[in-house]
Image 1 (cartoon, rainbow, N blue to C red):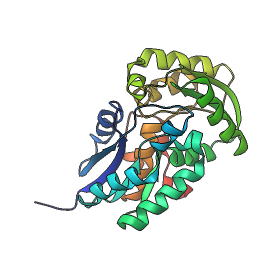
Image 2 (cartoon, helix red, strand yellow):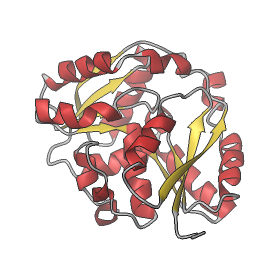
Image 3 (cartoon, rainbow, N blue to C red):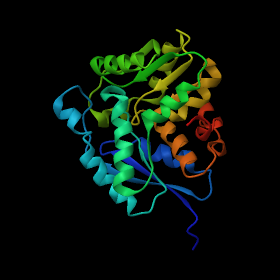
Image 4 (tube, rainbow, N blue to C red):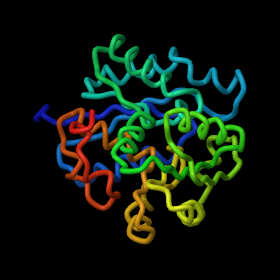
Length: 247
């Protein structure tokens, strides 16, 4: 049996039910590439000490070490906590994972930020399932990074499991509403939200790049294991870009 298969490790919030099937579907057309998942406890998204503690590095590193046992080529955090806790959290996490396992790491938020850096204008549309205060924190972080958040839409949910109950049709309508302000890109910020499957059709309809957070980390992880993201078809314009040319 050949051991040349590219193995992508994915850190997964415990109550997430969307990102695993989406990740597998994105990779399904690429022979020799597979995703492998490790969970740690996450059940609530809120601005509280208890909710923030879910993203302390200890449990995440424990989950990462389990992935390292499978000799994955990259460890990818498929979650968006750094969007409200601060981008530096993911930068530090990637460093800790690399130091703790010897395996390079990436994250959804940092991958999204690479994609956004390629946009000719820094006008951002933001779609999430989160509550208003979490949305405001995300918006503030992007504004500090130099982006003009020209439009946003959020559902107002804090239960992480319930994010998956927001239908694809509802997510598409949120994107359409955000698109009215003509942002240079629309970000669907939540890896338990049904956005990745919509990207290609929405881009054709709206004429605006649509970047889903669960898909973005796959985009980055592929490049980090030496697989051209352009081999992915039907999942939106992000896969026509090569992260190696951006990093």
